[in-house]
Amino acid sequence: MRKFALSLLLTLPLLTHAEDREWAPYKKIIESAKLDKFYSLPLAERDKVKLYTRFVPQNEAIPAGSLKLTVVHSEGKWPLPLDEQGRALLVPNAKWIAEDAKIWTNQPKGEKAGIGFEIMAALPETPQWHYASVMGSVAQSNAAIDKVAGALSLFAPTMKVVIFKFRKPAQLLIQAKGGDKRYASDGKHRIKLKVDKALLAEDPMVTLTEQPFEAEVDGE
Image 1 (spheres, helix red, strand yellow):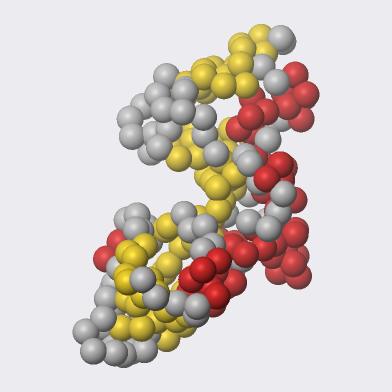
Image 2 (cartoon, rainbow, N blue to C red; image 1 turned 180 degrees about the horizontal axis):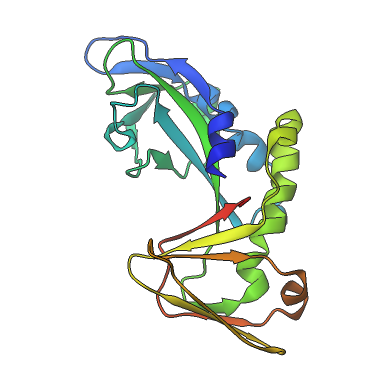
């Protein structure tokens, strides 16, 4: 999904102000990341996925994790928390859109950044769940991309796998009727699980030895 996300990047200049710098209208960020279209989908069409907005400095010397963004609106300032990869889980705020709130940045004058999105599976809080509750995120992602990205969906890969990411070695067990299926994490503490239509229909129990910190939906 990351390659697709970067292909959709919209580069915006970082305009200068006194200390912090005004970057862009909040509404423009929401629309550029397709968040308005995504959250307009019925909940049943997006309940298995999370859409992350990713902010990427065009200057590769600037770490994405150093980027700080703040929404300046009629009632004050609201920081937008970003992870070390420059990602945030943003839900459109209708009030900020209506009043044309602005997003400010801490980046130097003249620097530019882009906006993209990444799709993650919505993980249960427990390391044991039924297969379709998580792996159903693959089909849901493909359907959402078609509706949200519009013509750009033609350039998107078809989502096929969920990549579970752990902070230490882990194992995954699928208790299928045809026999147990076991998977071990690789050297990067990841388990890549390709969606299986037969297992979606059977919906067996899945058990993880560790709780993943995220699960990326990808086309690999």
